[in-house]
Length: 79
Image 1: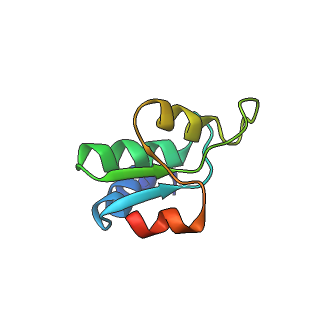
Image 2: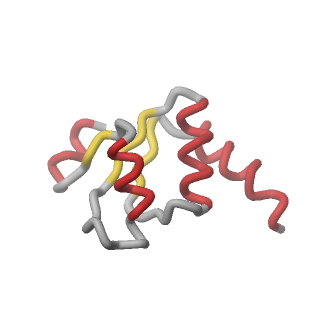
């Protein structure tokens, strides 16, 4: 049910210490979950995408806004 998505997104964000975003369009449920995570003071980590990728445009936007970049498996050790 669509009206449950905001509640679900907040629950996901609240249940974590940080949020790892591996793919997100600029307008997506993932970006709504990121918004909730930031409001709760959670860290946000993102994988970068090529500049012309619509599927990863949200990740690139989050990186520009200060999310921590993940570029390899060793980066997961910082979480």
